[in-house]
Length: 355
Image (cartoon, rainbow, N blue to C red; front, side, top):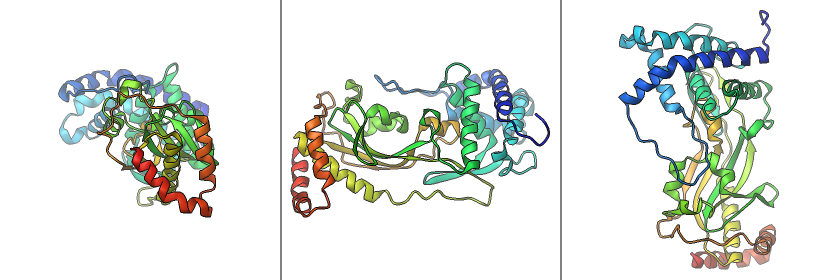
């Protein structure tokens, strides 16, 4: 790469090679970390959700200890790991997006990263942890693929665009999660409003949260009776200098959720079946994208609905009926009319009575 000129393909290739060498160097440290801090890793039965082999928290913890090893007097122990980390940090610094937000002073690698509705201080080692965790989810040239995905996010920031990335990593959703109807494929309710099966939304919710919200034993049916009413948005992370933090204001989501609840009530009445509102999720982004960017704690807000403990997760729920859906859609499209306004309280009471 010639001086002063940034070549994306060269940057990705060099980063992938450095990550591969880091993977070898960090293996014994991860084993030591595991035995020092044993834990139980839970997984949901019956799901196909991808679980990273390398947990982001472990990697951030390990790299943080290596970064501050002089404070603990463990320079000798962490020397091989630091030797493998330094080239990765150097290569990351060369990307135009990162070079403009990170101090030129070596060692001062902090910057501010913003997400839809949230943000926080990050470090280059957080990005490295994200790259390694994301690579463990991928097959094939995993380090090159992860490096390419990171470059795509960094490029979005430079271009100030929200074009769709490969695998929809920069697709986000505001959605209401519900229980009681089997939705098999994405369906457009009205422009901008989607009815989604659980598989389409699973990559945006932690498994532990699903277990908390859903009726007991709902996983017995493979979570097929959970669906979502959602709207999609594109997003990009913001990279800013320390002291120049910026917040991505996504607006108030509550009016949207009020409209979604109206539709869900109509859907319940049209199917003559109870539909349980589990929770409202605002500004949620893909969990794999969060891991890639080293910030798995940056998802949006969650407003829990009615408790699902009284529902029996073993019972089968009805499948989405096209005729009932069309009926609910028709009434929903005319929700601003006088007839709907006069009948809305009745619809609400009927929906409540079903559950």
